[in-house]
Amino acid sequence: MAVHEEIADVVFQETGNDMVVIVDVVIDELKHRATIPATASLAKKSLALVPPSWKRLDTTGEYPVVLLQEVLDAQYDVADGRPLTNDDQHWAESTIIAMGRRSAAVGSASIKVLLSEDFDARRVAAQVPNMEAVSIHKVLHSRVHRNELSAEQAANLAAKLEEAGRGPQVTAEDFADPTGRLIGRVVKP
Image (spheres, rainbow, N blue to C red):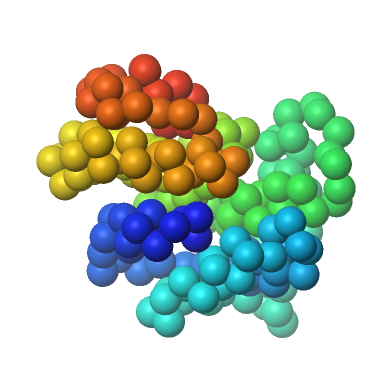
């Protein structure tokens, strides 16, 4: 989202007046990445773009929303048998997936959405009842087919994602395809 302000605007338009929750581990990860030269600029931009209207959720306070083991289980599922490069890999996504699983287990019917460019996190999240997993590319594709964005505009934004290493090259023709097959796995699951 923080790759470019125009992409952030599209995400903000998509969320509209919906309640958006940003979990503390996402903020913590962004703060950590802000100290690493290779990711500092993007992380600082991301932190600056979080609207004050988004509810910040403390997952580790006095009454934790999820247990450590639940997050570790989700992290294991996202890694899909591959060794983690570090203990924090997939941590934010895994926390959100664990929250979705906990919510489904207690019978909540509210829809949770994981916005992530991580295919494996989206794959796991999509298996959680009442949880959707979307990428920015999928948001762009959906907006094209609701006539809220032209295929050319979507391709220009996708080029910004590609430049930042957050996705493949995607053309206007790819976005115009209603099936999404031409775009590939960045719009799946």
